[in-house]
Image (cartoon, rainbow, N blue to C red; front, side, top):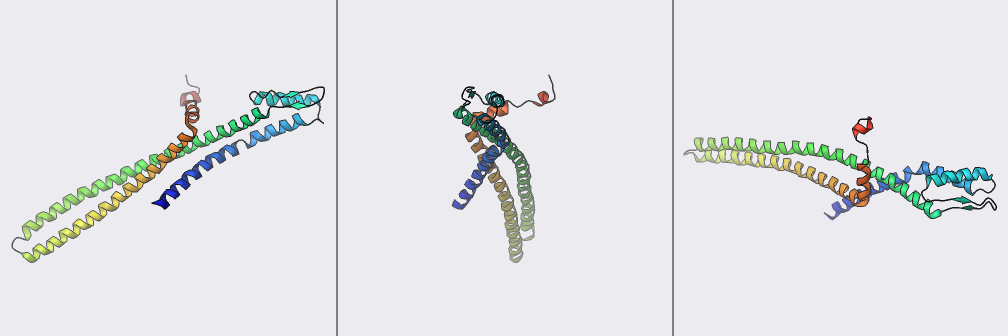
Length: 220
């Protein structure tokens, strides 16, 4: 049980690591663009016009950045706090995209598990019904044929008992399959809960802001 819990915790942590990795990888291109602009803005060997254009772009990209260039001294005044905050928001945004993708993946897995569970439960019900029919028939045969015959009674009783054991084993195995699927569904639910607990309202708002199919196709 302890080992299973450790394995489950490890799988959950791996999922969150993958989502965070998506966030870090997602900003690579944007970070390269920012670094290029910052390099120009800070380079006092470049022309003031060239540096000013880079600063204007940074101010347009980064909220409350307010980068400034002293045209007299050529010194660049930047807002590192705003820059760091913007980069963190980018990472968070891409993490949320990764979380959305993971939720979609889990949703598909849950849908398939629901189908598998229905089929497994139907197999359990079918086996139980077949058992009742089969043993009821064998029980009737025992009563009719074993009247006054102790050996035949014993033989038919053995057949009945063996059949009953076989049916019970088959049913037990089928029920184990249902239980295994239920466990997988429970694991998926835990993943969903962890994602929702981690990203909360940000994730909900992001999903709610997605265009509907009609909007995607320019519908009214």
